[in-house]
Image 1 (cartoon, rainbow, N blue to C red):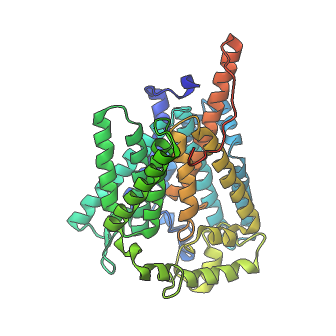
Image 2 (cartoon, rainbow, N blue to C red):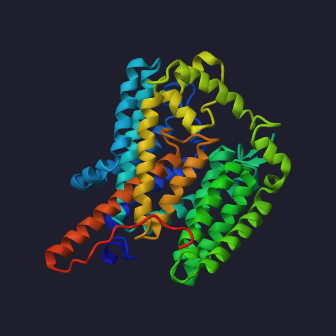
Length: 441
């Protein structure tokens, strides 16, 4: 198994497969294109006025398609592992027949297919060497964070929300910048814990500190939760449960230490969370969660009108054009998906999520980077409570979920190939079925 997952250099032909993913990640953070904001109903084909979005993402899709054209057999094998998502794309395309804006559905489905190609190219480029994917994510988001910090300090238009003082940076939206900083925090912590030399360790420490600064500036509580899940989860699964930490007492001590670390980080980044008033606001006693509960109530009523099929994947244009609302999402990924695709879409997504969790936790017993994919799926499930990224056409978080699933299945395929090769040469080893981790074992 070590042959499939050894840390090795990445040949140029494989590195080119990561280029489309790099473009996608940068586009989500450098051009003010907020993944959580889709085009409004009155600008269904807005790319005619501003073609930059189509050009940037279209270039990434084209490069991915060209790179995959010489690896069609491998691409088909990995795509089979994404069958729930492939079915969801087909269902989204079918929703053109009942959408008031079929052109918008077609554009979104084009993004779905393109994003899938980019994720497949990234997964096949590394072929089980998932550390390179983690490096790509950290570096690309690091560029976004550094650019955002510069933009905020020079007063770049739109980089600061002057009503709230929250940083939006080059992402154009404070919540978008916040979750990018959260993902960068998690990937940097993972790379720091698995680095073997001091120079990369110092780099990942610097990246983590930069992410914390941007996380604080964005003021996104949901993003803070994502950052804590990714970083503290990685610390626990890679350090607290490592073979070097034996005995329940030492494991409990590791857990207590992590809890203290969480409190310290929260005090530095978002001290309001520790106030009693914040807890009351969170459960809705004295607050509507910045108006979210009102939006959720409206969206739930809309869902009950068409619970099975939904209103189609036209970026909610069919709903918003008649409601007078100016939001681009319902700030809850689950309700948002129910409105767009009904129970059918929600069922396919649930299969995809649970299957992804099962496969990543299996791989987490074999590879360190799979820990990041597992935690990313957990963080994604939490993120969707107050934000929305599920099947959003160019949302970076949703793209990373596709990458996590594709990379995990590609790693499994690579492992199977290695075992088959060993069996053929007479060097097979007894295989053991990985077990779900016991947190105190």
